[in-house]
Structures are given as structure tokens and as C-alpha cells.
Length: 222
Image (cartoon, rainbow, N blue to C red; front, top):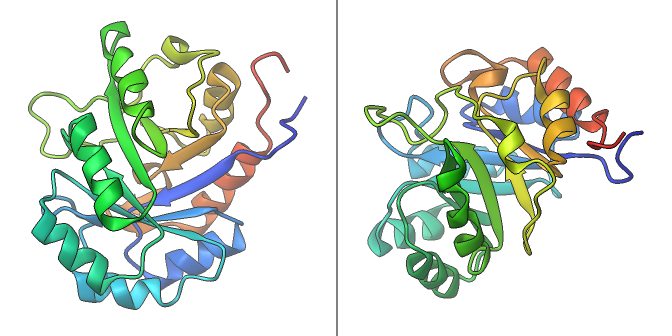
């Protein structure tokens, strides 16, 4: 059976107005803007503000940052109209709580998973974040903490839930997202490179296919 509530979809690494239009047409729920200079999807505050102005009402504008200090977050939140902050670095639970209190925005904390030893961190961050993003852990030599197109063993989190909403990321594509939701029961999914034709260049057909496959996914017992 399909889920009573369709799987929510986040497209991350938005860099072009055409991608916003494609996401709107596909009923995507969240748009992610990346603020990390090492990423090919990195945006200046000015570029992000211009893109954010084109986001239709009802779509959640998420800023992805990596170990950003208060000065950077002050500048970001002053320049770009945002609905949520996504912390994708090594921010501690205490730092997550500090950011949440300082900026008054919902905070999503990304947690990298490679094996069972990484799972307890999800419980720790679920106590302080508004949402958690369950992602594939980046390799030790990776330049990027996410957006590497890697997946982890989804069976590690099969049937698990946390006291806050959570989102599945890491290596998702239009071809495998339904299986990922079936195995994990993920209520929300996040994709970046899986709907691109080149780093930072989203494909409207891939966005539409991903969103449709996620919404049509089934529960683990379906």
C-alpha cells in the first residue's frame, strides 16, 4: 500500500531559476541552497537571495552550511530569506541548540552513517534539532561532507523512528528512491547529485521522476 501521507521531497544544491520552476512543477516540498565554497553548488549570498525571491510560497527554503561560525550565519540570515538552517558539518549537539536559539529558525542536523556504530548520534541530535537528516558518511578523504552520491546500508535504520521528523539522503536517484523508502519507512527524502546532469545542474525530468517515485513509494509492510 502507498503511504497515507506522501513522502516529502527535498531537492538540494539549487543554483538556477529553472530548477526552482521544475521543483515547483513536481510539487517538491523543500529547496536546498548550499553555502560551502568547496562545493560546485556553492552560492554567494547575493545569488541565493535572488533565487530565494523566486521560490513560490509554501516551499521551504533551506540553507546548507558546514561548521559555520556566528559571523557567517549572521551575514547569511541577514542577506537571504530562509525558512530552515541545515547543519552539515561536525557541529556538536550543544552548537545545534545554540544556533537554534540564536536565529529562531528550525534547524536540521545532518548525521553521516556508515555502520551501526554511527547510529547513537542520531538519538543525540534528535534531542536538540528540529529535524535530522540521515545521510551517508563521507569518506575520510572526501572534500565534501555530502553530495557525493554515496549510499549506506538502508537496513541499518529499517523501522527506526526519532522524536523529530527525519529525512533520508545519500545516493538516492529516481531509480532507487522507492526502494529506499520501502526499506526504511523514510517520511522524507533528500537528493542533490541524483537529479543532476552535471554538478549543480539539475534536470527537470529527473526532478519530476524522483518526486513521483518518492510519492508512490510504499511502507516497509506494504
